[in-house]
Image 1 (cartoon, rainbow, N blue to C red):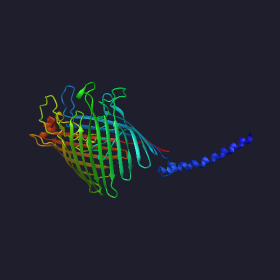
Image 2 (image 1 turned 120 degrees about the horizontal axis):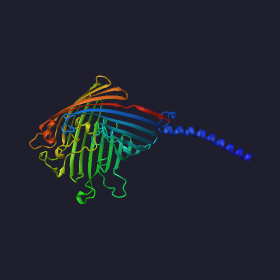
Image 3 (image 1 turned 90 degrees about the vertical axis):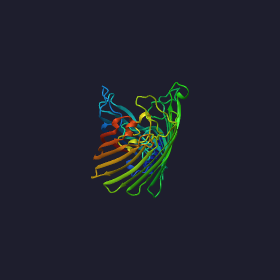
Image 4 (image 1 turned 30 degrees about the horizontal axis):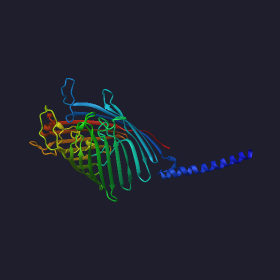
Length: 457
């Protein structure tokens, strides 16, 4: 018994010694394959970040005017908004998870605003560039004209999707799949209305290629969006039904030295939720030149097709005129605030009877940085309809946007701006409001983004 025990103890010591020798070698090999600079740092990373955004506005025209309890319309509105985000991000070789809790509201709001998960996803990846990401995630592609985070809106945009694809050697190919429901019903699980997303289904493919040894990038985008219309419990055309619309287009960028040129073209087809046939398109071009470290200039033009003209009716009449073909282009899930003027007067609030004459946006601007932490920007927009209007000119108005941004410290930035727009008789007719002849909008934002905690092991 004693001899057997000694032999066993001797074998265990040998096995233990081998394990002690192999364990550091195994750890070192895994870390080297993961691309870590040294084995001491490990390949597990945990970050906890906070974002505190305070935003105040003075609005006088543009979006819906506010009303008093007596029903009188005020000539302007003042309010403060806030957004708070707590982000927890974990990464290791082949895996990343992220959760972003968000609260947003207006100071003094009844109900204390809204709380939700802005993002909550997990991403699996391989060494050869393949990945799969599932959960609620913010999507941003190209210049964000079609798909963007829309961060100016306090709630911002995110999607419940599966995103998979490949990235490597200058190629990026993504496939995005979304399918939305209101509840986990046993029956009646196909009708979707008033959910967190406007669409029932979404299939998107995106391919981007950076041409080697040249500052040229090119993207192709295809979307098939399933919208649901009708009413639950009704039959025929008035009952629940799915309608599918497609978007197909391309985006190009050329960035030699201090110049950046961008261009895009997209077409929309298919049918909307009311079974109307869609036939729309848009094109854009933009050039930015950084003259020197302090001064930059930009010029650009956007054309978004519009519906055929229908005679404008009196404000008191009832009913919406119908088009046989809907020609108004919709930039679906893009960051609209970036493109058509800071006042968001277009593609946020519709015209009378939901008539959309499209938009022509010719703009020019400049940026100036007198010191490293301060950036100034001024942009002029000439705005006109794409549709030719009977008895009215196409010109909608002229918009001037002035912005300033100051980096107080590495994780705190203060921004403010002022916009002024003069509307034409065409603008007043399409919106049926005299106040649209002179619009003013002022705002400021303080954003603080400290990193609360970070560790590696």
